[in-house]
Length: 275
Image 1 (spheres, rainbow, N blue to C red):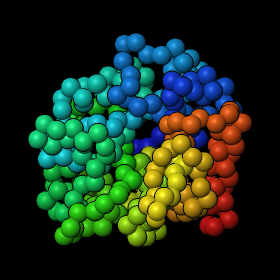
Image 2: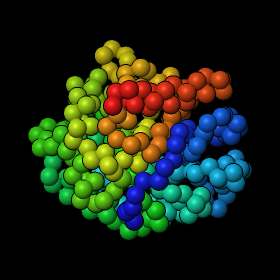
Image 3: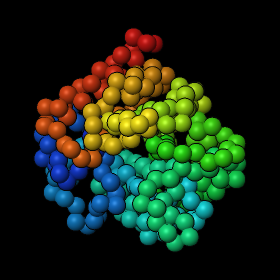
């Protein structure tokens, strides 16, 4: 299914370790949950509570392997669709990456070769996924540690053409743009120049750490200023339907998470002055 992006507001990734924190944090307009962690017919009580008070829940896939040469696994697609239905979700999201090949699981989101041939394969995979999903699909850029040789397209061109061909929405992860900048020398603003930001569904922000010149997208550190600056950049160029804070470990006290949400709102607010 294709469609327009709903207004989501500001949110945080729901995790079992911080379920009560997420429920009581002020200013949480929506949450995102890793689809592979859910049993759609046995949803956690916390998600029922959030849904009961009208908080949208977005299933976020990590294993469809849309960037792989193999077609998407029908069972994984059915699971993602079941999660969206059980949660009454307005959309679902997944990464432009591959996670398996030849029957082997990588256990990691691997970058897709940015060639015309690969683009055609990924576009068909996305269309297959859309046909099996009851809600629109948003596609996310990943945090890269490497690129493939002989690439024909930039990241922005690849994602932009993919969105144009499929009608999919975009989930722009500004932390991943920062990762690509540090690790590969990519200019994040050029990527944004090449993206159809009118297809923007929402934005991810997250923290990380640099070690020996390599940026690690850990999701266990506070969001750094360069990532917030990129969020402001996106918001200065387009209407941002939603922004979500990702945190996957080393969870700080509630007040610190609330402070990060405030910093995110402030970063978006700065865009009005940029305009």
